[in-house]
Length: 262
Ligand SMILES: NC(=O)c1ccc[n+]([C@@H]2O[C@H](COP(=O)([O-])OP(=O)(O)OC[C@H]3O[C@@H](n4cnc5c(N)ncnc54)[C@H](OP(=O)(O)O)[C@@H]3O)[C@@H](O)[C@H]2O)c1
Image (cartoon, rainbow, N blue to C red; front, side):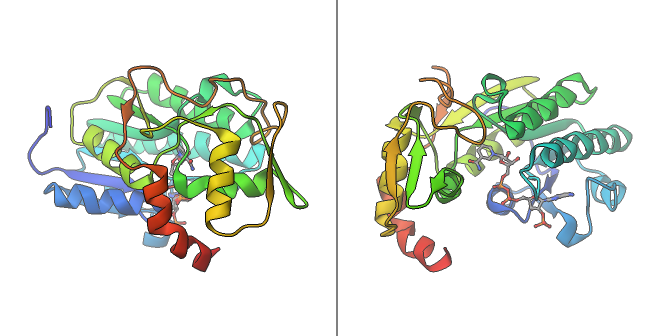
């Protein structure tokens, strides 16, 4: 691990979420004081509630929060307001590194309200005075069902047959952990899964593993959260760091859990 520092207080905004909860565990295993912060623990980045207190003596803040609503205006408002508040409180507290989790291809997908909100979040971070690192990840394996639901009409799921390189949430958390305990990049790093798929093909595999009867149809004009995709919209550049977990292995480990919780 390069540039790793001795034990630091690291605040995880969204520390109760999918990635956040894994990150709290991983950072703790590396000997850091990982403090989860979210509305459930009295910290709200939209109102500022609890921020000054939780950021006291923090060296690093990792933002893995997410908007409760994906509606265009709501998600934009969430990422703009929460990021602005967070950065202002960090400046006052003397935080030395702001880390945020974003998405590969955000700047190529401006027809999507969610992606526009992530671009706005990234812009505020780049323009702030706080040293920063942005980790752009591809879609999580755990997100497959939500993607299918968003593309469902009756019994069919329409998705474009473009390149798709998703990754396990565990590998996302490991990548964010590496960045959080290193020196600020003042730039962007991309992370992705170890294998390249066709978008429709992977969703078909994911649904059939849980005996979901929906039919997946490859449709080049089908929209993904409001935007058309081109062949490389969702995949990273050559320098991306790749996770270790293969989709088939993840599926066989988690298919039972997914079918129980869906
Ligand atoms: N899904 C994907 O495939 C994908 C791919 C790449 C990047 N990402 C990014 O990954 C990030 C994390 O996603 P996730 O799926 O791990 O999220 P998640 O499980 O939905 O968790 C969201 C977290 O945000 C917290 N939160 C909500 N409102 C808040 C507020 N006002 N103040 C502070 N915290 C608040 C929640 O806290 P409570 O539990 O207290 O409500 C929860 O801890 C997102 O920014 C997303 O854009 C996602």
